Image 1 (cartoon, one colour):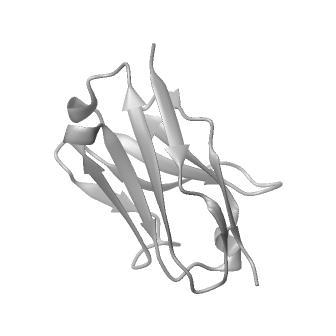
Image 2 (image 1 turned 90 degrees about the vertical axis):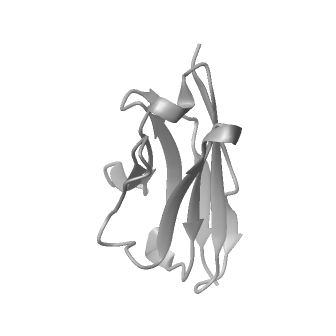
Length: 112
């Protein structure tokens, strides 16, 4: 049974930083692509960043230069480092594994 557990969300002021973590179990982590998505109220879920098993990364234009996805295969964990946060980054952030499995999400709120 695949489980993805996200953590690290919270309330942060504009310009602040957060690091999200997603720990995976039940899959062979190192051979699978991982991704972060987000969904703001009233909006569709959108891809934020993705990383392949070969550590090739892709970041959405809206977060390029501010967010960084990375992975630690020894810990079965994928990270999303978020810097220079803006109010429009407010959303529930979801981890996705192998193009199929979803975590439960973690709330990120950017507000003064």
